[in-house]
Length: 571
Figure 1 (cartoon, rainbow, N blue to C red):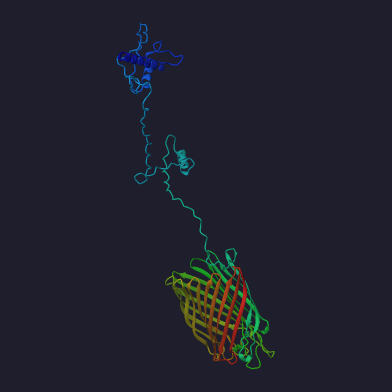
Figure 2 (cartoon, rainbow, N blue to C red):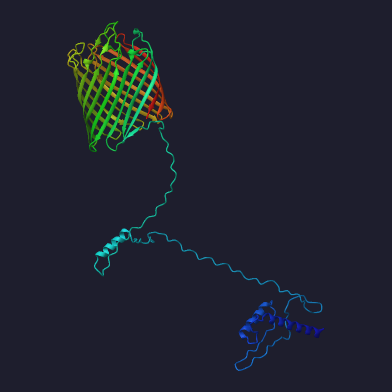
């Protein structure tokens, strides 16, 4: 009914207002509004009650705030004539509102984005327009100490002038250290040598055994027989590693013993040395030496008895030593060398099959001479030169066993050039003329063209070819012969099949002209050798060599085959 409906609404509104007032009532111990509570607290409670509603208009509490001098009025309620619905709900059939509470969707708070941090200031780009700031010296630096010294010297009250700041440092890119690669050794089987100070010594020892089918190099008419033999050899090589000066040398010696032919036993040795002392950058002192020990074969023309039934049974030895000392001077591109020479040659007596002795020791001699050489460096790879030598030979006995005076004087003049065509071809070539005059007028002068050459060709790191040619004026005791003009050519080809396996092929040819006796000899040899290096210290060696001689002197030709295997120790 209308009246009943209006009464119900008024009752419901009153109930809601009471509930709201109770919700805003302070906790225990606090004053209620209107009972000693300030107007400010009452208004805050009313606002809290309004915020608790879902947006509907609620009846407001209108407390009477007493003015000064007036009493407080009682709390009252102001209810509108047509209050709005306090709760939203479904309308009932009788026109009422459902008492089911429905406060609507929750209030969503607007989410604001978080403010980003301010951007960083860019790093300054150091350039001429924006240079680095000046450096300031630290207290213990050299500049700071200088400033303190200046201040101490200045009068009181006057400041020391500031020193210029140190120059700015420059940033260096960091170096990334990488693990070094292992070094690849080019010759892992070469000996290391024994260092003594800054000089390296390379000693070695070698033992070999083999077979020689003609140990004494006899002609077929003498029925040569072969024999097994043993050979021992040793030596040392020296090489300096000095900042100035230089020393290089090599010495080797050996002995061959034949088991079935003791008469053919013989020694041999060879050595050479070169030392240089640098006085100044353009002046140097030179010292050179040589040594050679060899034996004469029994069938040599110079020691034959001239009888078919008498022959030499031993191997007479020949020992020669020589020395050269002098000075070399450079005048710009011109180089001058002046040396003095000395040679000493000993001969051993020969023993004949009939028990007699051939006095060869009396033919030993001393040689004195000098050498002058001038060169001009056209380019670093080409240096032509001219050279002249002069010497005299004085024998221990004025006459030999054939009655000839063998003392003589000789000279050689030659010209040539040292060259380095490429890194693969280097060498020296010279040519000239030589002559030797003897004290015995019955001996014709020993003379002829002199040609010397040394060429080294290296087509690859594994292959080396060496070619050498020489001309020498040698002594002889052959009757009516003044001397022997000898020309020889030697060639060597060395190739590494593997890093520790080397093959070497050798060949030689020589021509001997006994001037005054019309005797000519032609001979040579061909050989091959294998060298297998087990380690740096030990190597295995094997070789074969064929020798031959063809001569116009009767019963002096020969051929020989030599086989050899051995073991070499080196440091």
